[in-house]
Structures are given as structure tokens and as C-alpha cells.
Length: 154
Image (cartoon, rainbow, N blue to C red; front, top):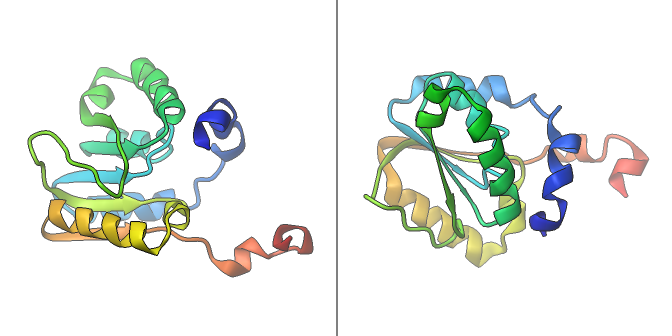
């Protein structure tokens, strides 16, 4: 699905930054690498890397990762060195060198793209790569925000 909309995604989602201060605060409180499951074009990856964090982004969409790679090529060298991208299914991923992470992030309603069995599989995979005292942050929409106007509720 996202391959077809990748070239338009940032045009409609670039302004969605309300969650960023909280995510940066979470990242600052945790030591270690950060894993983003469903990283898309890098909406969170780049601010996290600019803040000094090493971030691994996973996404199934080749189109979205292509957008992230374009942004990565244009980023400062220090930011480039902090970001690793993998095209993989977040329900069954296996990463080279089996890294552990201090924080895993499932951003912006990514969870809603999974059925129950897939969500459980993803959670099991995340559990295996979180370090001791690692945290998982799952961002989901507030139903009040979704249906804030009659048009949105439709």
C-alpha cells in the first residue's frame, strides 16, 4: 500500500510533529540504540539521529525506504552514521549482528496495520531485541482526535 503513496506521503505528513518532543524525551531517558518499527520515510529517524541517537529503522515498503534513503544521502555525515535502514516485515525481522535496543518505537498508528496475530508476533520480536530495562513505546491515535469533526469521523 505505501509503495503507491510514498512520493506523496511527506507532503501530507511532514507537519505531524506533535509526538516528537515526547519521543525525544523518551529517547533521552534511555541509553542504547533505538529501533523504529514502521519507520517510513524517516519522520522520527532523522530528529532522533540529529539529537545524537543511533537509530535502526524497519519498514516493509521499498517506496518509503527509498524516500528515507534520499533524505539520508542529503543529511549531515554524523546523522548518516547514526541511521541504519532495513526493508523487512516488522512481525518477523531478524537483524544482522543481533543488536539490542534501549528503546523500541512503533509510531503513528503502525500497530493498526497489523491483525492480532501479527501484532503479537511483532511484540515477541521486539521483546527479543530490547535490552535489559528496555522500553517499548506504541503510538496510537486518540479516538477523540480522529473524530474531532463529523467529516473526520466518516
